[in-house]
Amino acid sequence: MSNRVLNKEEFELIKKMLGSTQEGLKLSMETFLSTVYKDRVVSTPEYLIAFGDIPVGLVAHLDTVHTTPVKDLFYDKEQNVMWSPQGIGADDRAGVFAIVEILKRRLRPTIILTTDEEIGGVGASKLVEDIPEAPCKLNFLIELDRRGSEDCVFYDCDNPFFEDYIEDFGFITNWGSFSDISYIAPKWGMAAVNLSIGYEHEHSKSEILNISWMFNTIDKVCNILENVHEEDVFEYIPAKNSFQSYGCYDIGYDYDPSFQHWKRDDKKELCWGCLGGFDKDIIITPMDGEGKYCPDCYSQKFSTCLTCGTDFRDEHKVHLNCEKCRGEN
Image 1 (cartoon, rainbow, N blue to C red):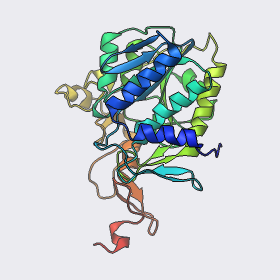
Image 2 (cartoon, rainbow, N blue to C red):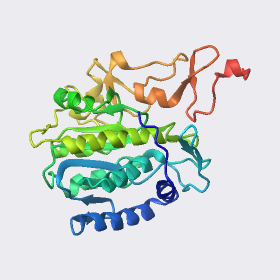
Image 3 (cartoon, helix red, strand yellow):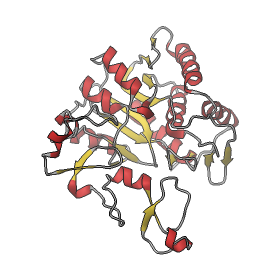
Image 4 (cartoon, rainbow, N blue to C red):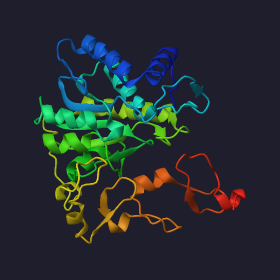
């Protein structure tokens, strides 16, 4: 695994990205993409697309969950991690930075940058409304918007050949609830994957960005782009009994009254976190018995006590031990 640290130029770039509003970053990226792709850039209030000559689409979103941009940024070069007391917002500024880094290596995939992913995939939804079919030759999509170091998440795309293809580049399949490709992939009829881009404890002020993990994924994605062949085309195959296939909700976060139709499938269970439908055998019930969660949401909401080894609720990821071991109850 790469242990590369940020050089001065890279540090200043990611600092600028982390300190930008969504609107400011979108304007900067539009300028940058127009410089690289010339007149092959489409810009709307909800998304940016730059059409490349490699038949792969890279996807990232421009917003974060935080209302205040980063003001104080800390970088521990020894541990090679970054954080901010305001919440670093590496979900998904790390994905945007990665795309810039990939383009600097003279690779030209198609780029898709969306707005307001964190409030239900607004930009991606508008994209497929405006462009209901793939606008250029694309063999598959890669989103850079996943926590951790080596996850690959396919959501409701159940194409085993594509899963094997991505895993061959050094990723391990995991579960997820939602990202922009949950809208784009089924609409455009192509397989898609979300890859780890190095952040942890997202959606909290204790979020960190592991620079080594980020560069490791960047290197792997470059390897994919450099070795993709004309015949490496992967279609979108919807998972059997997937939550989407019931028309229960619009992939995002809103309930729909027709949820009752999904509920009749006794092989599925509702995740209390993302409202996604998952096989019962992977649903996790906390020790306190409150709620049922998919593995993805469970890892966000619970931590393991270092003293007694039990799981406890810790959505902000600020504690190493449970309340009992901390002496708080």
